[in-house]
Structures are given as structure tokens and as C-alpha cells.
Length: 627
Image 1 (cartoon, rainbow, N blue to C red):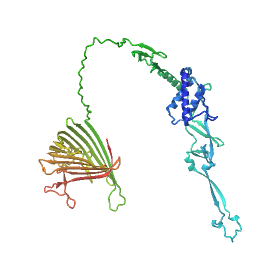
Image 2 (tube, helix red, strand yellow):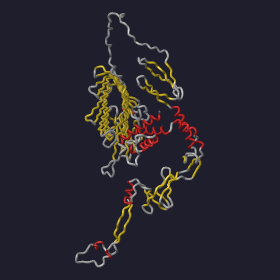
Image 3 (spheres, one colour):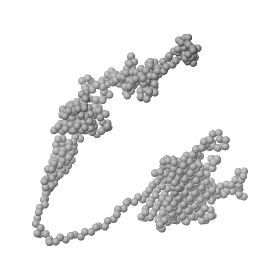
């Protein structure tokens, strides 16, 4: 029955292939495969094998229909049980393996271009493709080329033999044409061949007459005994490994062997049921009669070639019957029905949002023989910003925190590497919306630097380092958000603490702290304004302004910290960045110098200092990444 099904499937596949490829019995030549109405089993196998192995027949070399035909060929040659019995009787590990002489695996003809250059059996060989003739005319000495112009009608040439030049023919090798075809040229000089003739694990040796090259297996050659079906093996213990691999596959195939049963009901409907060997589970199958009554049967597969059927217990079948309705009440009361109230589904809110952005800016200046003076330099700035936002609309609360690191360096030929930017700050604020766009706010702000700082060109005295100085500002107040991406935070109750921990190394007076103290506490008002906007699609401008006024000491002298960042996008990676930073701190004092560059002193001998604006500007090509 299986063989008949295989023959029917093969016939259908052959007819389908014939229809798709346009094969017709009247149009087939005598030297092609014949297509008959009836196939014998060997003829059908040979024809399907021919179709499978013809690469040009298939649109794709990995077509699923091609794989199915190959599996049909594998299963139609010999039943698996016969193959298994044959392999079980074989023991490949008993085959003797010994070393033998080098084995010739193939050879190719050599095409010599000249006495020292040759090709190895190139496809489409033709001397017209690779060899060109170059013709040169060589004239006898003492005779110029312009003497060979034919004379006028009244003149004659007495001796033409002395005026005919010799011809020299040179044979040139067109190496460009050879290389375009992917053919390697080899040279043979002093019994050395360049490049080598070896390829893919084979050693190439030229014959004595230099007409061919023979390819031998590289290394030791292992040969199996002549009574075995094997000839050349890859190693001494390869057949032992083959025996273990075959045993493993036979065991695996035996365990996973499965059969599909088609169970028919009374109406001819087929239900597939797979029986897998080694599966001890029982599967439920519903059986129905003409009255559509269902009965459960459990089908199991306890062993190879066995099935078990078990009828489910405690089964009772009740059928509907027609009854007289004289005992029913005279009227039927309809139950009350009403729609239950429904509540719309609400999306689960996402309270936390995280963002990270980085910008690496590079600026370079090169000067060579520059009469106006100057110095070559290269500078870079790394700006990292991480931000987290908690937003609970139901509770009308918002908590925004960010951490920023802005560090830059510059290198010149004269001074080497130096720090030119250093900022580390943490900003956190908690808002509660109370009156629309106005809400109560609590803020925390910390600012310091990471690396040591010097007052160049003096690089022997440290004037700043991590947490020296540092300032922390805590404020309570309200925040106003007039438009999107714009906030104004006013904290009338603000406390600012500026401190220097290492006063032995750092002079705290240049940071506004009195001599003999480590900290400066200030009580006042803090105003923070942030704004972001895009004038054009690729232009982004960000403003950050922080103002602080001390209630107790010169409240009219307001500390200003303003930063402007302008990014002009060039493409997905690169941006032109302009960074302006202005700081005015009334407590940070700077010495005043006279016209000769000497510091001006007070009557008590101390240096005369004043507060001055601090300004920093940087522009360069930046690479930005946002997450």
C-alpha cells in the first residue's frame, strides 16, 4: 500500500514538473530522457533523481519542493528497517586502517606562455586573448626614416635594397586580460614555482615533461583494507568515530519514530492522530454517533507497533425527548433584564521616564610659518547629561533630576595638555501643581569640578579640585510654566552654602570665603529660568539662567550664572555646537593690576581685589548621541 502511494505521488509530481517546464512527448529529442505514461519503479526513481540534480531546472537551490523530492528518493530506495538491520550488522571499528603511498586526487594541464610563465588549465584558453604581437621596424645605420618617402615622378631610386628596414616581432603577454578572468599566472625559475601550486589541502607537483600538474593529498594518507567499502580515510580512528555516530543516529531515530493515523468518523471526516514512539502519554479522542452523542476514548502508544484504547469511565448519555406541555403554567413571566454599568478601560500610567545624551566637540587649529604669530592647538569637550523624570498626573506631582558632566581639555605644542572646561552639577526639583500653570516647588542644586585647576601659566599652585570649592543651594518657592519647554522657578527661601574642604592646599579667599573659614553661608532668593526652542528644524537653542541675591550682604549684587547652548545639526551624527557661559559672583574676587602688570595693594598691604565677570566661549564640531 505504501509503495502504491509513493508511485501515485511520484506520478503527480512528474506530471506537475512536465506541465511547468513545458515537456512534451512529441518535442523530446532521442538523446534526452523519455517521458512515458507509465513508469516502472526504477525508471521513476531515475527520472526524479535527474530532475533533483539538474540545478538549472530550479529557480532556487534551496526550494522546499526539491527537498521533498530528495527525501522521497531517499525513502523509496530501501525501507528504513532494512537499512537499520544492515547497519546493525556492520561494525566499522573492525576495519583495519594503515598508512599508504601518496594519493593522486587530480591533475590539470599546463599552458605555457613562454619559457618561464604558464597557466594551470584556464577556461576558454585562446592565444588571441593573452598574446599580442608587437611589430617594430629597424632601419640600417646611416639611413634616415624620411629618405623612404617615394620620390617625385622625375626621380628614381637606384638601390632600394639598402632602404628596406628589417622587421622585429615581439610577443607580449596581456596580463590585464588574464587577471580580469581570475586566472593565476605562475613563473618557473631555478626549479622554483611562484606562486605555489598547492590548493585546498592538496600538494601540487609538476610532471617531469612540464605538461601537467598532479595534486596529492597533503600529509599522511590512511587507507582502509581492500575488503571494506572504504578507500581513503581522514585519520586512523575515523571509522571508530563513524561507528559511534551511526549507532547514536540509529538509537535517536528509533526513539523519535512516529506514525500519523487518520481516524475517520461516520461522515468520512478525517482527524489526524500522531503516535510517537517513546511517548507514554495518552491522548483524548472524541467519538460521535448518528445522534451526535460524544464518547471519549483515550489512545496511547505503550511500545513500538502497539496502541492502547481506553474508554472513559462514568459516562452517561441522555437524549432529549418530546413531552406534552399540559403541565406547564398558563403564562410565562419574563425575567427583568438591564444593562450593567461599564467603566472605560484606562491605560496603565508610566510614571518614570529616563533620558541620556552625550556630545563630543572637537576643535583644531594648525599654524605653520605664520607671520602674525600664534600656536597650533587641538581642544575637545565631552558633555554628558543624564535625566530622570517622575510624573504623576493624578497626584499632580512631578520630580525632575539631572546630572551633568562637562569636561574639556586643550593641547598645544608649548604647554602640552591642559584643562579648559570642568563642570559637575546635580539639579533636582520637586513640583506640586496647585494653580494650573503655577505650582509649589522645592529644589536642590550642587555644583563643583572634577579635576585639579591651575591659574595658568602658573601650574605649580592648585586653585581648585573636586569639592574644593563646591556650592549647594536648597530652595522653597513656586514654579511657573507659561509655555512648553519654558520654566521659571522662584525660591524666596533659599540657602546657599559654598565651601572649601582642603584649605591647606586651596586658597579659599579667591572663592569668596573669608580667611580662616572653610564655608560661606548665604540666605536669599534664587531664580532659575530654563528655555528650549527650535527656530528652524535643525537649529536648537537652550538657555539656562540662575540668579541668586543674598538678603544679608549687598542684596543688590546679584550672582549670575547664564549658559547658552546652540546646536546646528548637519546630519544624523554631526552638529556644530556653540557654548557660551557667563558667571558673575560678587564673592569671587580678582586682583587688580596697574599698567605695568603689578598687583595693586590696599593700605594694609593686602591685594586690592574686585568682582569681575567670568566668560567662556567654545565652538566646534560635535558628535551627539541621545537615548
